[in-house]
Amino acid sequence: MFVLAVAVIAGCEQPPQELQAKGGEQIYAKLCSSCHAPDGRSKATLAPPLAGHAVRMLEAGGRPHLIRIVLNGMAGPIEVGGRKYDAVMTPLRYLKDDQVADVLNFVLTSWGNDALLPEGHRPFTPEEVRQARLPVSSPKEMAAERPRL
Image 1 (cartoon, helix red, strand yellow):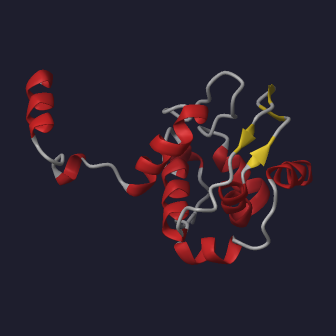
Image 2 (tube, one colour; image 1 turned 90 degrees about the horizontal axis):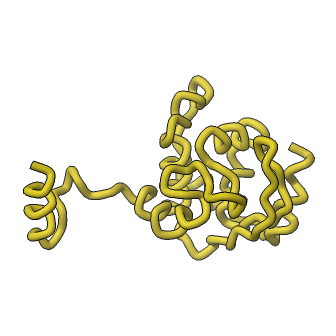
């Protein structure tokens, strides 16, 4: 049955609408999963997990901080869950406002993160991203904000 489904999908120019990934999922798969892993649980010591941790960052630093991490990147060393990470997350400032909102909404509703969201949480919007684009910070400056959270 599975082989038949794959054969049918492979024969289509585009998969049926219900099988197409949402924008945030596609962006995550292309730009984020190589370090944070496809399941958001991290790859060794490359980057911290997003599963379970992204919501904590939302609570600690607020919505603008999460947006700023995506836009400005982050540089270690940092510690998450007792594990140390010392890599550089590339700034993704070239993403459009709606793309940043989409990828953040994907991360916060994936891998069990949705169950951890505070009551009344609302999705990120392109307008929020636009407002958080300034000031521009370096990945090291973003890492320096972490201890204050």
